Length: 154
Image (tube, rainbow, N blue to C red; front, side, top):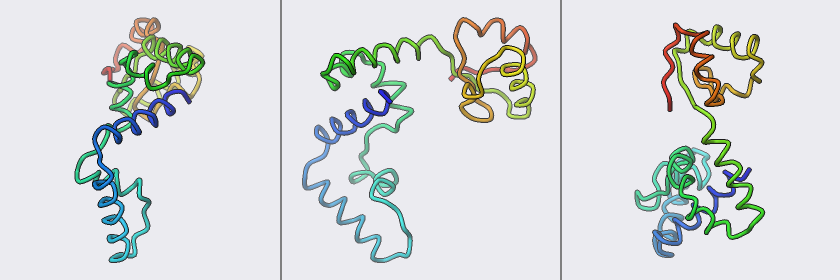
């Protein structure tokens, strides 16, 4: 939850410092103009993700987490609330203590059986069929059990 809050505040801050009212108005008009000429149904957010504000747009969520979210001074300034700052610091610490790893999708069954069945990880450690998030301290033991799996850190 705190990550989403930070991302929404970041987008607002980015928009306030990069986009003029005129640019935003043009973007909205272009969006509605595109709806008139087509049968496609998409939201204004979908439009922004594709076209941006005259081809300018804030970082996507994953890029934000890898960059701006790591800047504690910036994020604490956005939050400006002790309860949220504490939540952010706790989340950031937990995130730093974990590894995100990808692997060959053909080995999904083996990785799943080992992590969930043998080591007791919960299914939510799988971010996708070929990406896991584990405790950094567990990596060496997992690597020794799954020695034939080529993990790549994200």
